[in-house]
Length: 89
Image 1 (cartoon, helix red, strand yellow):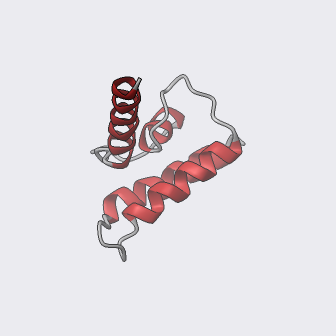
Image 2: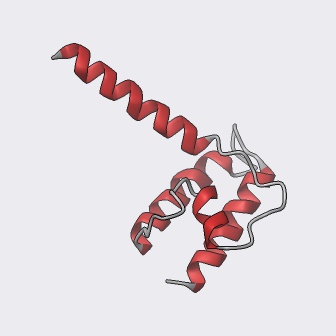
Image 3: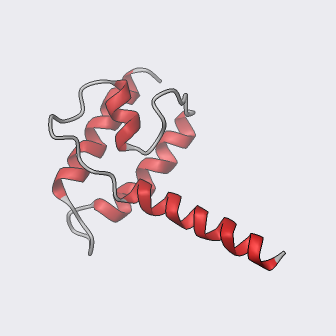
């Protein structure tokens, strides 16, 4: 039904917003769990290399300091997360 489709779309958009608006970790990114959090994955998730890269690119496009919604701290934590996760790939 149309109501169900609308409800699913609203939930999808809420998920996107929650991933995009992650709160930077006050102590920085130090381990795999921190890195997954910054990229919007659950701590128990085992994302593929492609999933990690896709998520990073999407978030980097939003948080790059030169962009309209840029945020240096978030971008720094995204880069740190990629460095940590890159070691385990």
